[in-house]
Length: 172
Image 1 (tube, rainbow, N blue to C red):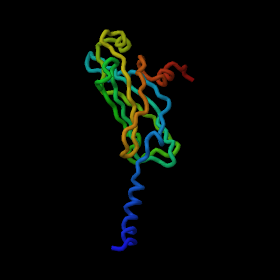
Image 2 (image 1 turned 30 degrees about the horizontal axis):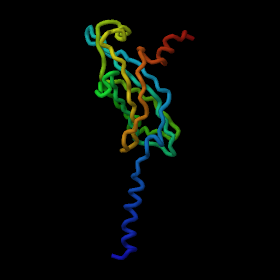
Image 3 (image 1 turned 60 degrees about the vertical axis):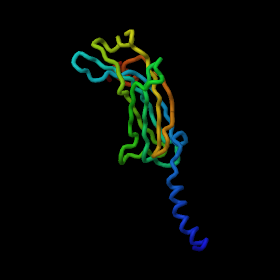
Image 4 (image 1 turned 135 degrees about the horizontal axis):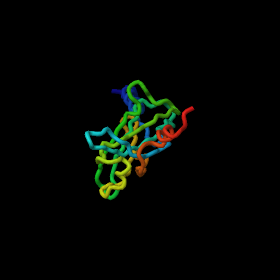
């Protein structure tokens, strides 16, 4: 086989390798408007559940639309950081909804780890066994590695500020 034939055969492989380069999530994504709170989950009989939530906007700051973006969060209780208490996952770009260049999407990740009691949800924060929590927010593009985008503490509040603002606004 001549050197020219080898080069011609290698060209499609080289082009395929360049096409498969996965972007660095931190180079093409950013998160803004991060908010944390506790959500009241569906009750089971007398039991009331609350779960930590991290809510944010993902923006595509890259040069092209992104077909596959995923978000994940690990939740850990303070004083138990070595143990993952709960987790959450969301497909930011479900089938048929790529994230356009300059576009953004709201992401809400609610932990599957939660507290339960039979009292008022606000009273959870006063219970002797209550521990504050922290989230680790991860994003990836395509089959890239997961990249850590932040580690916000979960605010001691029930519900989103956005929802609270709607509830407190007078009707027009």
